[in-house]
Length: 272
Length: 316
Image (cartoon, rainbow over all chains, first blue to last red; front, side, top):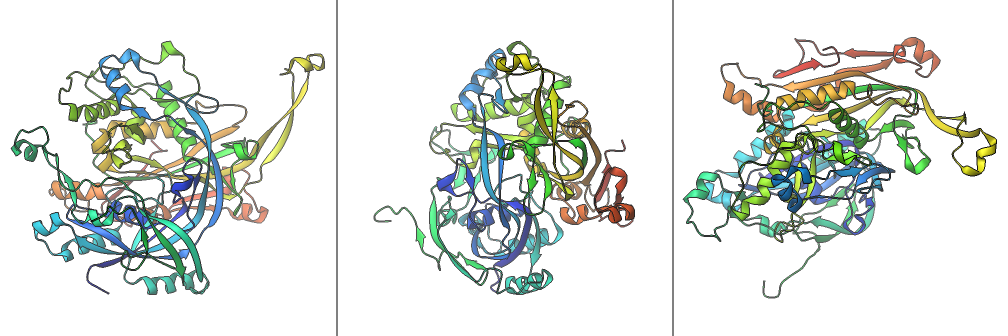
């Protein structure tokens, strides 16, 4: 085990890792995506000084498919409207949800029920973290402490917020997989022997740009900046969301997703 | 005191029952009660429960303390809204933001201050800003998260045929009566979980008073939602685990930091509430009423994890 590696077990009653190609009526990938795994870790602990690279995801319980149709809201709250409402509240027009209402619609969701995963990730110092100068161990022990005692910045979830997740720290992914599969009366070999899942979303925030870190400046720091209009209100790099995909393969219940070992499909600007 | 932003993490468990009613119809199955086909256990969606909370707050609006305090309007309303009713008590923003950069932020803050549901459950905003488009910035993440409600045991939905004395179609006028049908669950006890994350409460301005109102709304959500279709629905338990911090009370600063992140695993806390069938009900094989259940709380003052307090909100 390298000294910046952590393994966290997450599980929940339901999960939906939405495929971007079918986002109107949500359809889940058959397994947790690396970006969803990153979201879980960041819910437990994140600081601008670090970033996570997901190494692999082990599947303890695959879950079964189930579909669900709900009344959803299609309208979003427009900031421009809100700016008008702030000045003249009598112009407020609420969003009308529910069956038959103009802003409501019924949407289906194809999700997974009863899933459990082991997320193995590397913790790296971002450029902000390198400037700060604490060793990586400081952050890793804090993550471990939180995961072990159930502390989290906000409740982690499996794809969407209504599918809340529980979590716990594990020392070693393979050992945990063997232990859990024995508890579930299965052999860990039979959980998911091998499957090619095709192209899968890797992340929408480029991991190579996340290395710089990102944080909003505090008010007092902003005041110290020269009063120029273009002065940014953040430090590091504001990563513009852009989808990156990878060839996903499951072997022996493991989805390998370390960016150095998988083939990424991404937009490259010539000369970069 | 109650105007203070919420600082402690809460994990809560809601127990509710239905007798001869349909708690949440499934549009995919002709409005049959929702059920998980893998386990035959009944389901109630998160949005169904959130709708009940919204309706309760709308029906019994809280007076706001002053024009700067949080308002209790609801932005996402059910069905058609009567225009004249909706705009009571919404306050204009006092200070107008001149800095263009900060206008969107001010609008977001104003929405959170005026609308209880935005402040509690969050919402999606359209920013129109190129850099921010598609990023998490366009989202207000609410501090309160509801999960699906699940019944403890498989349910057996029944289809009941009824005679309607009022015909719905002009063509049936001569018949005077037509047949209709509805679906009921004879009896089921459901559990749903909720989580409150203080980190998001800071951003939306969700206060302790807002949380108290949420619990009040949950406890009474079915009382004001009666309908023939829903049968009898009752909230049987609302176990609220509040994380307060493990340190000595003199160490307030450290406690505050701990209370925000929580002091114990939520799943372990929930496991302490045990719901079992009584022996008679086990022999019978299925529950017929709440009397067929044993709900025991395994937590006492002594064995509750340090830094956690349990409030039985249903007793209050």
